[in-house]
Length: 156
Image (tube, rainbow, N blue to C red; front, side):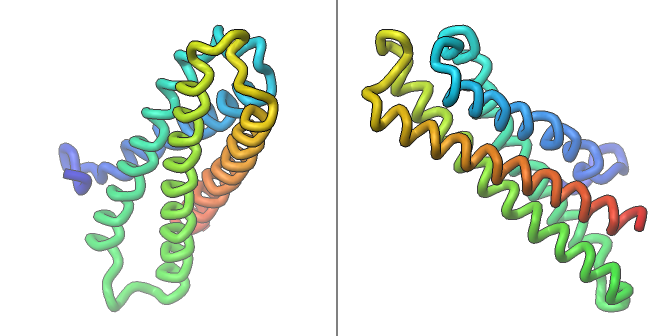
């Protein structure tokens, strides 16, 4: 399922969805956490991104594993294998941190859904906000590192 579509590697087709939706989720989660007055306006978009971005991250990683298994063999140049292995390591971390960010974002949006002013009591609101910001920053970092290492493996 994650190998090829019309002879093209699925990875090359879906990786750009992750490059777009993960940073959008990170940005949306940060805004949702830091600017409570906007929660009512952006809540629905953040919920959609919290579902879409982890799915894109999962599909991108799984298609990358399929591509790796098809292309990399024992005769592959050691330098290229190292670069691709590093890329896969970053991609796996991107997927897990994006899933964590998606879950945390869903928890916060659902918890604040029917609350006055879209706020929780101060301590849980701040705690969840900090979790969202930290996970968003880490997810953004790993998206960058994954893309950069992939570009170096292909073009470098």
